[in-house]
Length: 188
Image: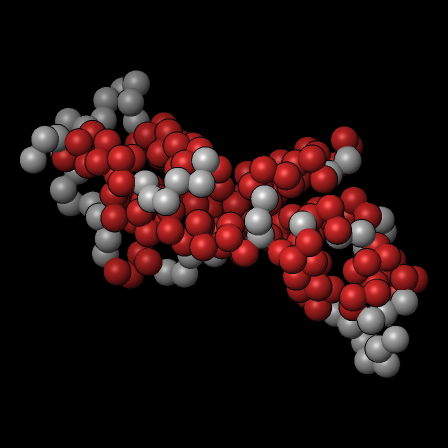
């Protein structure tokens, strides 16, 4: 066993490595303790049970998948930002094969709501960034939105479709970006 103190961050790195190489189902108290080189009892100092360990792992993986850097400084148009975001998420998801499909099945019933909440927090961050890019895109037509078709709803639609394309393992989101261009800019 390790003589040095292990941090929660190191343990989560181990969990993510296990999930990336063997799938989320391989993340359990014994496998993580063994792979971390710590006693099982030590692991319980950081996580009360397997569900807590899985929740922390799922949260970290969502952060890894949705970590996109700072493209806002690049002054991208909204469709270009969507393409950038799609590629970034696609690369992150490739680190964790099957995660987009299987993560919800790995969490026990009582903890599913916490997992859903963590996922929603990640999506909220993405939606906020998308809204900022949309608001800063000077090419957006004044008539693009109405009372029933607002920017927030549009972003939700775009994000849902982007995630669907990712889950279908599409190589790009060019069709979605074309729909976005025609919606926001008209038929230039």
